[in-house]
Length: 106
Image (tube, rainbow, N blue to C red; front, side, top):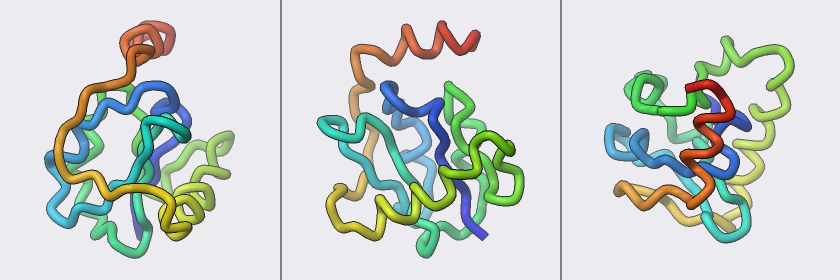
């Protein structure tokens, strides 16, 4: 079972989660997608990324909130498309990140 990035990540791209991933299973694109995704076939379900996400966007697959279930398929589709770059190092968050975090009440 993999972890899933949900829409709280959209317009943020805080990449703190990427730095703790032991298998480099994060993919993203700050230009078009404006968020990060977890490759379900590469994630080892360690959970190290969850506490690192400042916008609480990452969940174990079996704990994804009911209204966020579509993100399970979206993560898989986006990662398997080959259109995203693998993220292995912290990057600058998007200019909209702090405002998104504030709007989420975090």
